[in-house]
Image (cartoon, rainbow, N blue to C red; front, side, top):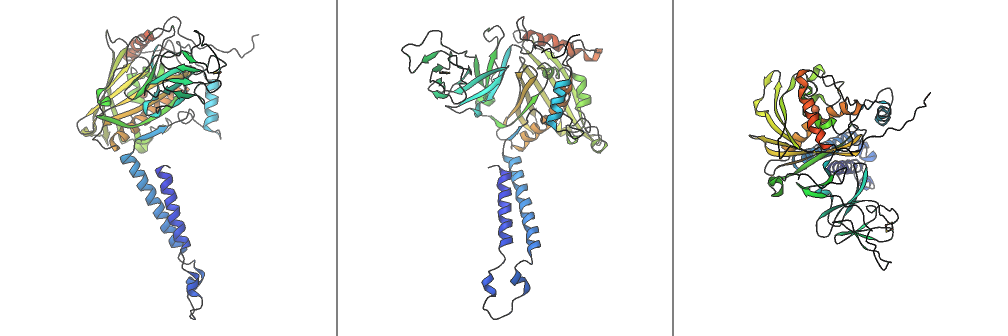
Length: 454
Ligand code: FES
Ligand SMILES: [Fe+2]
């Protein structure tokens, strides 16, 4: 039960107790003395009790909220229609989102699945002996943790008759057993090692095993359109492995855009001074973020973006200097310098190093679910001796700024030949850098022709 629910239940319980505890009716029977009306009826004082119980409920709710803020990891999972769409004229958000998806022009898109490493799950979401069905790069995969503690990723559909191995499949040692007829597949290479009713297992009986790794408490898979082996590794952060930095929460969003739009943000330096300048208190809805009410609080950004050189040409870095001004006064204590290191198309490490707020990292991972649907997770690990309220605040601030971008991405068109000025030059540089993740056979979006030709 969540803290809020628990507090609500306790509050209601206290309330009910106070309302029903109106004295024993027998007290007034047979005593021979007239009782007051209040004692007879037992209801005078009820309004006071009701008020008391509401106050108690609210107090408990606030306590529970405070407890979660101070001591619990922040976990916020947004569904695809939750953020970034404008629901007007009596439409629901889901209707607005569907309309945008149907009507918008997508533009002349690059290939939709770049080669690289992609996060499929956070490690703590997969226990020993557990299997999960995940959609990644338009494929269904079965992610499971063997009894040996290792995580494996297999194509989800059984080659025998097509059952989904992750839906009812059983983990046996380091194999996954199909729920339909019990064929068993080895996690390491996908080979079928047992058919319970057959004398012999055919040599060719196997499912695709995805190259995978588990690093920084995340499970990732390697995708290459030609099936090539991994060309780089995901760097390990020793602070996470050794437990110096601990898990402090995560957010997850689904975005309707081409994957490239999201990392390109790092090289789009001009948008920082426009989209991300209003204080986070003014929220995420771009119709209102420039409201006069919150004008007194501003973010100030200085940033630069550069690709790295060999042997790390698959990496790039954005250096960000962030300041806050309140009524024009600069609060230097809240100056934050962040290094955002991108590794391949799908993983970014946002490294924080602050004199008194401590050190930590947000891992920002983009995984294509479908050609124009990206799952973006932000997972924060932070110095264990810093109270969770600090990483909670950092993750919340990041989430608010990020959701402003989501509103842009969900509604925009990809422009292959953008109209840029000299100050936008990093965008072209970023596109050239990102093109290394496409190869000749990279999958492209195929359009369904649903209009009549005349
Ligand atoms: S469908 Fe998997 S064993 Fe038959
Ligand atoms: Fe942005």
